[in-house]
Image (cartoon, rainbow, N blue to C red; front, side):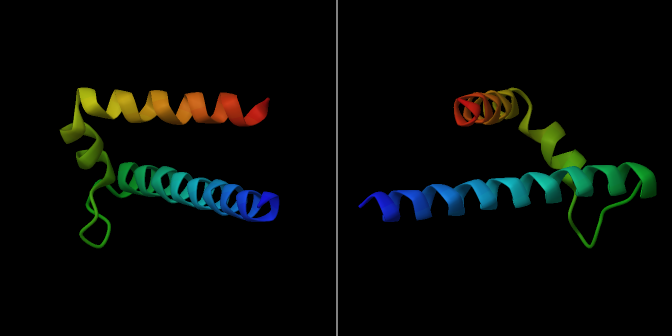
Length: 69
């Protein structure tokens, strides 16, 4: 059971790390190019999310703080 929990935790950590890296890369590239990236508009999606995106940021920050302990 511990191995399964460890595997799931490691997989989720890796997936979150990769997705946040892609999001940051997408935002930086879109700011440099000033156009959508292959139909993907990360800055526009963040702006459209409005106040609900603050909840996502808070959840990620809490997760990262919890993960460090």
